[in-house]
Length: 316
Image (cartoon, rainbow, N blue to C red; front, side, top):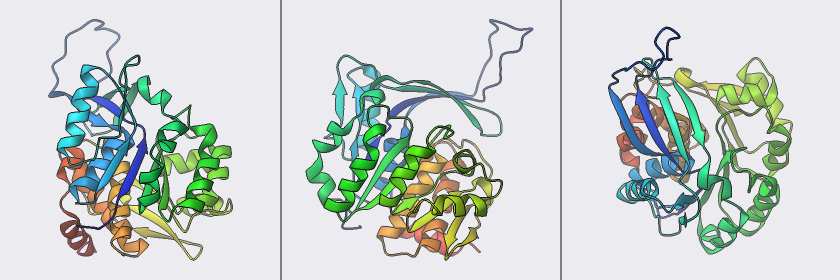
């Protein structure tokens, strides 16, 4: 067990996953279609990264907002059963839990339909109320960039203060369209230790056509010490001494890719906190994501950290 505390803060949602989902045909409006699964599960950064860390044995505190509703109670129970500390989550009596309809196609790819709910109220106060926990943390993960309207304007000031007043690794996570977030990101990057967007997000942030060019572009903004890109089935790409280095992932048949990027981040971060170098940490992240997407259950598939690190070391 790692003697540490990670704080995961921000986006917390109920995922309603429908699998497999096919678009409604114009010639069959209002038709009835049978699917394999409709499931409600905890989702978003706080759930996906937090539960994966907890299952690896990393003590993790969740900060976020849920509605004071039935869905919120279901999500709270799932997080607690996964081993996440949930005693500081805020329940909103006048706002529903944020909910996402996740439509998973036959190849495991997803489209998302979001009702923002309580997430839209997650703000600087949520972090300031818990400053004692942030001071003790060895890592703080915030996100998603661009999805927290009450917090986003204050992110650069918040990150600067966290850099001054804590010794934690500071991580900012992205999800969804990033075409409008680059200016804000540039003000955040100098304070971060880790930044790892997906390849699609990196393209939107930089306009570049290759991961190497995208990483070089991000690094020009005073990028963090550990800067990379999640590259889907190809694994991940890490910037090392100005060069883009690919860390290949083990091939896997995708069942449901929901939360894969967040779970990669959990594996990466847990390995870094255990003292692994960034290359080995990326291999652990690749393996964590692969285990999650290869079957139903996501973060529930993640093994203890020692097993994950052993498995990652065996990947060619």
